[in-house]
Amino acid sequence: MKITGKHRASQDIHISGWECGSEFELKMVVEFTAHSGSPATLVDPEEFPSVEVDSVRFFEHLRGQTVKEVIMPDWMVERFTQNAVFEKWLLGEAGEAIQTAIEDKAEADREDAYLRHGLREEDIP
Image 1 (cartoon, rainbow, N blue to C red):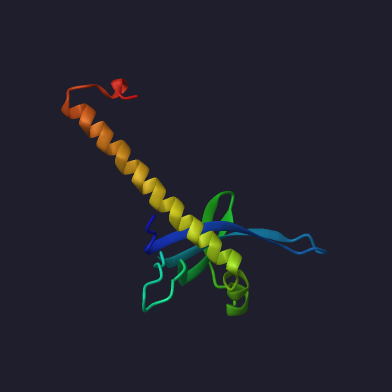
Image 2: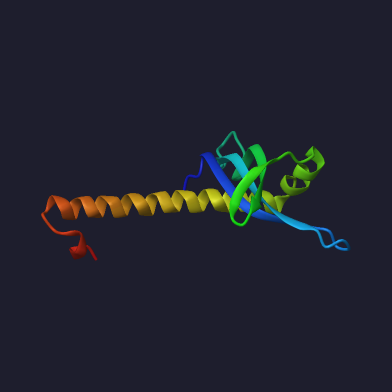
């Protein structure tokens, strides 16, 4: 499956003070470009799938609602983004987005075919 292109992924981040009991939740939103990679050729080595992080933003959440954007220090952003697990997560998110798009298109095409043949929505399996 080709995953090359722009994508967005998000996850909740929980920050708490061990001793003081303060805690809050942030939503991390990552904009990134995924590259599918390519097989080896006679002149070029194999390129493995990879990602380039375009932006990382954090938003404070309160009772499920976005309250405001929170500017995190660069060192903290790097703690999240500078490891292989993070890249693997982004590649997985890109793959899931592509798979969902393929399934949604197939379902829409199936519904269109039923409607063209005069069938009702409840006739669609």
